[in-house]
Length: 365
Ligand SMILES: Cc1ncc(COP(=O)(O)O)c(C=O)c1O
Image 1 (cartoon, helix red, strand yellow):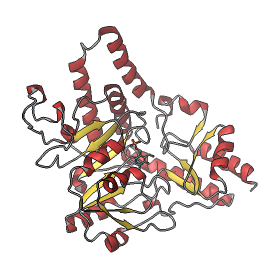
Image 2 (cartoon, helix red, strand yellow):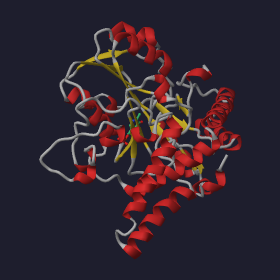
Image 3 (tube, rainbow, N blue to C red):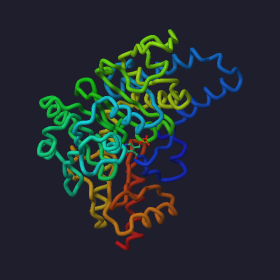
Image 4 (cartoon, protein in one colour):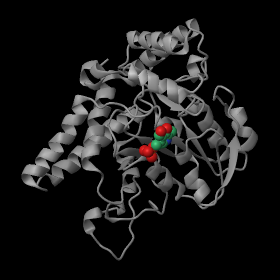
């Protein structure tokens, strides 16, 4: 795995990808190239930048199983979720009770009724839990991986459930895209949203909105020159929406961040998401064994089929433990009731052993 692409890994034991990942040299170079071109020549590269944006669409499409024309780039995942919430008249939306705020607030804000299913102690839920509350939902919003517990949802089962009830399926892939394989088209996902700065290692400033079936008949609810079927027509008196997912970009995409995202997506495509996910799950298994040895309980699921790169540890005063680890050069974060350790494929078993050793010292085990 490409450790040499990530200089930040030389400086600390970096176990906080679920917060924000270090970027690889390739992502850095892609943004620097844009700023250099802009510095030296102004806007003369504009057409090249549009071509590079399309390259990034292809890389991201390959990563998530969608056609490049249905990949849109926005500033952050929350913007994508708000746009998706604007596609429907208010009805009933269903979500887990443990969701990240951006997965519920856009629908609550627009007056949707909320059907909440309960997560279990380890953060897990299944389709039976969902079916109990979501019978009359019009849209279901689910994080592929939950930000705190790390529970990884069975998207195939959820998608079958939604298809059988005519419910639109919205997936927030922020905590998994880049790390786990996905075929959003085959799964029948209506909208997939994800930030670029976590498992995709692209830095801040860009998120993906992927609608494998395209936009509905009326087009994007957020209109601008680039939401038009022919953006270069430049008519301001006729609404003529394009129906590709990419038409969700009402205006220019954030070029430098998009180029970084394209470079990072190429890197993870090169590694292969299957290999990446297998390495993550194997490292998580190694970490769990070490934590068991020193008697630190894990709040995340123990079944590898439900696991992700996020492991939530049950420690007293997680914020203080994170601070103490940080002083020892180990970067983690405190989330909800636990200490969140995140493991990407660029981490090593030695780093996890170091964490377990330091935790044993801090917790007096
Ligand atoms: C599941 C999930 N969605 C969205 C976000 C934030 O996305 P953004 O800041 O790009 O809107 C986070 C951040 O932790 C997250 O965990």
